[in-house]
Image (tube, rainbow, N blue to C red; front, side, top):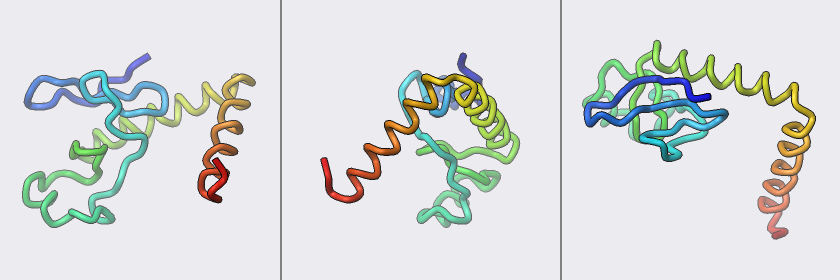
Length: 104
């Protein structure tokens, strides 16, 4: 189930689908980055002064970021109740760890 965060000026929907943030139905980000920690924070503040977080290329206000955080928490709770999802998360974590160590 998708959770609508906002509609961009060009009409695309920014939605949370599971643990992903999608823009116009395509993956945009898997996490939120606070503007104060973003490498381009000066430019972001000039263009979107109300932004507190970034979802990929999309600036979000505090209220929009809270919608994303709540949707992530709900999706994670649903996944943690599903044994298949738990197994898949461990499998993906093992693959990521192996890639970090140079084992592919």
